[in-house]
Image (cartoon, rainbow, N blue to C red; front, side, top):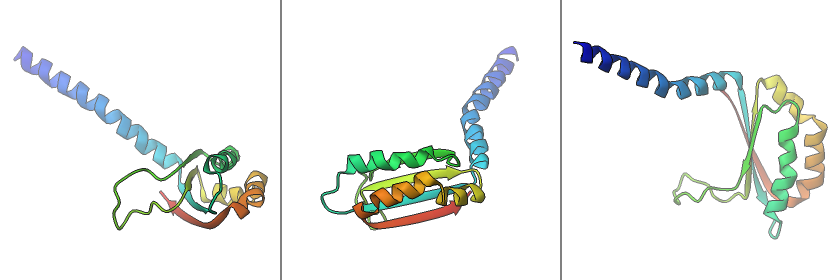
Length: 129
């Protein structure tokens, strides 16, 4: 009987500790309400690394809660996967109003002014969580 109680306590403890990260992730998702994803197709010959350094300033805008920048992952080629872009940014905002303020933020507008000639296509996907 005693070993059964020990076993139940251990299972309860393991269950509680392994589910904690999921709870934290769920709580974080509640804090960040809006995601803004931007995909850039650069002109031929543009320096991708330099462009990524330039675009990193977007993460320093005051209303941006989180910022990620990267290049296409080397995942398998499938009809539903688009590897054709060169750079992608994902920005998290706490509200739709924060995202609206970002649109007129001087750092954002300066980035566009300095770099818009470097891309031939840009696509934005916004969604609420």
